[in-house]
Length: 333
Image (cartoon, rainbow, N blue to C red; front, side, top):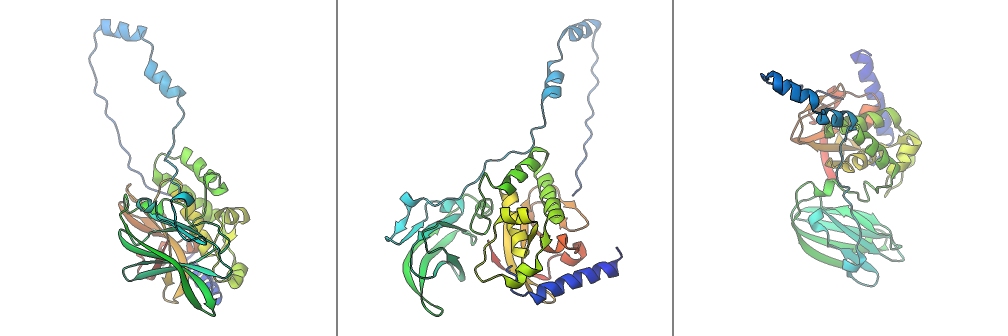
């Protein structure tokens, strides 16, 4: 495909996204050569070696590749450790693991507010007591948590609030676990698929490549869904994987779920893409391994890297994503 045609495809795709502005939304490796030292052996030592069973060689031949295995990091609501009222419970027992959880019951629409410094996140939550989990994406520091009930029109009243000082194990904790925005568990279809990929991988970057290729090849942009999606929509990664269709939010949530389950820190980001200021969702991943390059995007070692699966799966390449200057991050999950 020549560059003009490729650019045309990208423009058409961007136009589709603008028409549906409600949208809420593998690689180089180092080769090493081992030079074995040549040892001089006497005939006696040769005889001994011939009589000795080559245990190491046989073990190597019988051992299957181990692949990549990491502990599965959970995020759960602990009712017995939560504080609040008869209708609202907030669990701050796992702040060191980078998340807060809650459950609330009401006869009206509810919102959960997370505040730190000058940043505020407002979340829609279930009013039937279904637990919710949200990341502490603003890092260490003092947080305030509020559950708000809709009174009239767009006005809300506080039902319960609490405050806490957060000190996480490390900065990656919020981005290696499930949440309302990357909703999965150990038995999720997409996680079982990621586990299969990990079994064949030699490095975590191999997993990133496999997940990227899988989503690009198996998920297409759902224009009709984007035109009809309602405020408060939350993706279901397994549904996206099963239907093979989704909007930008679905792409980013599926990628975050699969990669996080394998211990790869992955952010789900909402923001704007210029020059058309499309409100969009994409991912950023962190890797400590050697950077690698594909025709779609570039990844550098030991830093966060931007990955836009929606555009990549639909024809855009690294020239479009570029150095990320045309992306404006607004919200991180």
